[in-house]
Length: 224
Image 1 (cartoon, rainbow, N blue to C red):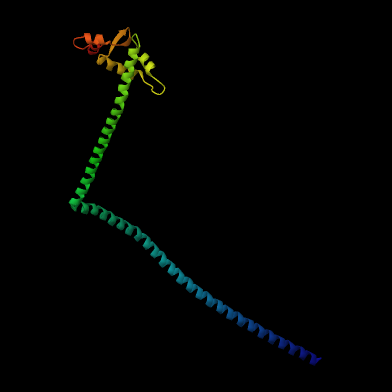
Image 2: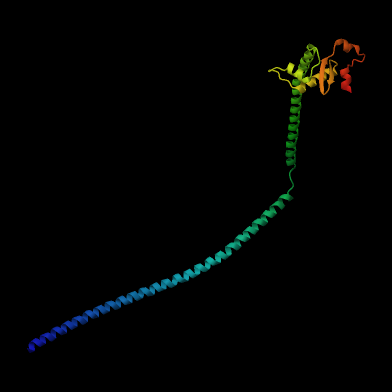
């Protein structure tokens, strides 16, 4: 009985010693981990402090650069405006070369000559048009005179225009009246009025020759 109790006591003591050793080992491990984490926290805090100081410095530098940039831009713009204002003054002071005036005079002469050429072309065109119209008017006068000679009585300008007009050669009453007035001035036709209407008839050779001044009644009416 005494032997059994001693065995139990020895076993319990050995277990206690084992537990104590295990607890002590765990405690040392915990302390080591605590120290390691504490050291890491201290290192991170130092890094954080360095980053914070760097950030403050960078922010202050950014603010300083942002303040100086508009001022520098304004100064550059002012310098540019001053240089632009000085350039026209410098250009105004430089005398222009004489050749430039000669160059300007040459185009002006060219323009004058071009205008003269245009006027000549217009006048030549007008002369050509008159030359073309002259045969046509003389031919129309001949047609009108022939129509008057063929008719026995007086005719109006509208009747003569209808008589001499053809599809290939249309004529107007105004052109026929102009031709008739030309014949009246030449003493080749006589003009008479019946109310508001004007009629024309040919002048015979005897009537034209009987007038000592060579002027017929048609000429007298035209002169009046």
